Image (tube, rainbow, N blue to C red):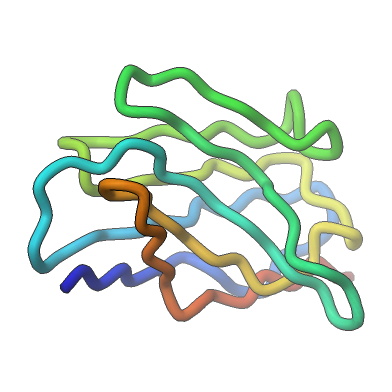
Length: 114
């Protein structure tokens, strides 16, 4: 079994920054893609950013140029979020793909408000 634990969420003013972290533990062989989704109240969960094992990245258009995803040692993934906007407010979920199975974290709240 694989467990993912997110950290780094919180309340930040518009224009501010946050860095989310996600650490994986358990039975880990090799993660293909790791990434972040988010879900705002009343909206569907949407992809924020993802990164493959060979460090190719993909971003939602709404966060390009503001968010940067990275990973370390194959089992920790980060997202640096700059120039945050109120519309970035959501619960952010980390995920990891191992042998075609997706594992999810419990989510961390990000609130952007003055």
